[in-house]
Image (tube, rainbow, N blue to C red):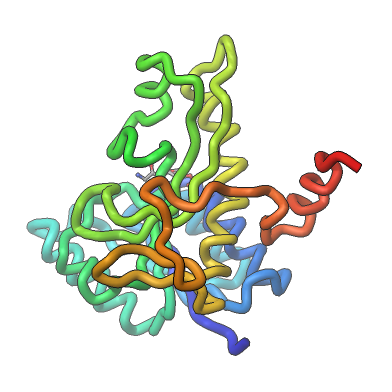
Length: 233
Ligand code: GAR
C-alpha cells in the first residue's frame, strides 16, 4: 500500500491528533501526516505536532469576516498540502459547504457521543442529565448537517455511579484513541467509502449508528494485546 497523506484539524489539546501521528510513525497506518491545522495559535496540539516535525499552520477564524471566508482560507491551505484524507480531531468550528464540498467523501470527524444522540456541545453532561446508562464516541463522514453525516464507527462506555462529565470524557477519549486510527485505516485501505446512499464498509452499508467497535480490531498493538487478555480461553 502506498503512503497516503492525512491532514488533521484541531482546536486544542490534540490528543486524538497525537494518536494518529503515533500510528503513522509506528507504521500502523500507511500514511504520513502532511499538515496539522488549527484555528487557535495557542492550541496545545500545535506545539506537539511541531515538536514531532510535522508541518503546522494556524488560520485564526477571528481574522475573517464570516464562516465562508474562513472556510475558503482553510481550503486553500489544505489544498497546498494535498491530503488524501482530512480528519477533524477536536476542531471546534462549524464548517460550511465551502469547506465540506471540496473534501466530501474524504472528510471524517470524531464526536464524543453516541450519535445521533447529542450533536453539538456538552455531550457528556447531556448524557448524564438524561440519565443515560451509556456514553461513547462516533466517527462519521462530515456533511453540511452538524454532526449529522453518516456514522462509520461507534464505541460505547457504561456510565458509572458517581460519573461526572470529566470522568466520562476521560474514558471516552481513551476509546477515541482506538477508533479514530481504525476508521482511518479502513479509509486508507479503500474499505470505507461514502456515496449518495450512505457510508459503506467492504461494500456493505454501515448501520445508522455506525459499526460497533470491537477492541480486537484495534490498530494499536497494545490495545489489541489488551483485548486478547480479556478474551476467555
Ligand atoms: C474529543 O473528545 C473529540 O471527540 C471532541 O473534542 C475532543 C478533542 O480532544 N470533539 C468535539 O467535541 C467536536 N464536536 P483532543 O483535542 O484531545 O483530541
